[in-house]
Structure formats: structure tokens, C-alpha cells
Length: 237
Image 1 (cartoon, rainbow, N blue to C red):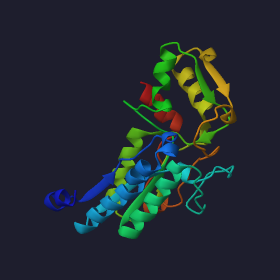
Image 2: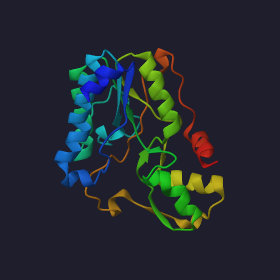
Image 3: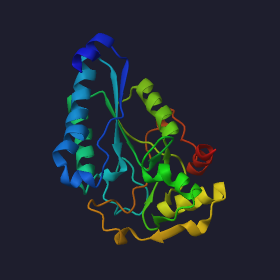
Image 4: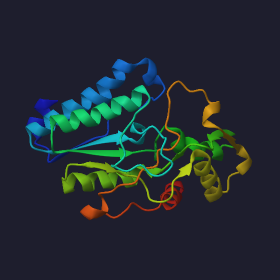
């Protein structure tokens, strides 16, 4: 990898690679840390060798969810599961290895060709399938296309810091997201079954609330991303 960096002399490096199987991480800790911590550190070191801007994506899961409001950079991370801890470790390693590192925390990301629940939810409803969605877990949906543009802007800005990047708005629950999809596309709302996060008994703990807000973006001349409902509408079209 270092040889490639030295040969190509990149102006900036954006790390979008990660181990994202949150539940699988609980039984694959070593693999998870290699991707989310060691891998990030290796990229930061390689970027430093060619004096390139470095941007890496972290997660809203670095917070424990106890806060009922938006999490900002003033809030202290307290990751609960292996995946969340590995992502915070990646943040720390990147910034220790290369002071020029830019960390972007985001969450509830969805987009074309995505395989996570938010990304496939519209197709499931279009196919007339009943879906179970959590009604008491909250976050800030983020359209991948909007996130990608902001990542490029941050690389060009080249101001090392931790940024929170999500679409604007008050955030929503998984159920709220699903019902908005159904309303925008005219799908049957009866296909949506609301459940509690405590009913699912999943291996990895997840924050009940992981809504993010950024203290720095506007101060550095970056306008807020558009409202999540508008972004979702455009995605569905």
C-alpha cells in the first residue's frame, strides 16, 4: 500500500473501508479491529508519507445513547460493543499517527446498492413484504450521496478535526423512516410492524439515541446538508 501511495502521490485519501457487521463483530473481534483500527492507522501513516489530506469515516455508535439530545463533539464517546470500540480506536490511531487526519462521524447511512436495512427497506415495502422496525431507537439518517460530497469538501478544506456529518432535521426512529418511505411512495402502512429495541435480543448493544450535530462545519463555511426527508424523497425518485 505504501508503495502505491508513493507512486501515485495522492492529494487526498478518503477511507470508506470498514468492517460493518455490528453483530458479527462480537464474535470476530480480531478481524473487526484489523479493519477498523489497524487498517485506519496504516492508511494514515501512508497518507503522512506523501503529505496528503486524510479523511476517515467513523460512526455514531461511539456514543452510548444515554443522551436524549443530539451528540456533538463536546460529548465524550462511550462505545458499548466491539464494532463501536474498534471505530473509536480507529479515530484515536489515525489522529495519533497523523495530525492532519480528519475524522467524520456519521450514521444511519443509506443509498443506492446499499445492503443495510435502511437501503433495502423501500424495495421490501415495494414487494409487499411486512417489515419489523424499531420505534424507540433514534438517529439522523444520512444519504450516501450527500455524505460523499461532504467528504470531498472536507478533504479539500484540509482542517484536521472530528466532524459530525448527517442530513439536517430532527432525526427520526427506524419506524419513522419506514413510514416516511411508505408515505412518499404510497406503500401500505400496514406492512410496517413497530417493535421495541429490547425485543430483538441482538448480540451487539446499540445506542438507543445516536443523533449527531456538528459544532464546526458552519464555522468553517460548510452549509448544513439538506433535510433528511428531502434527501430521502430524492433517493426514492
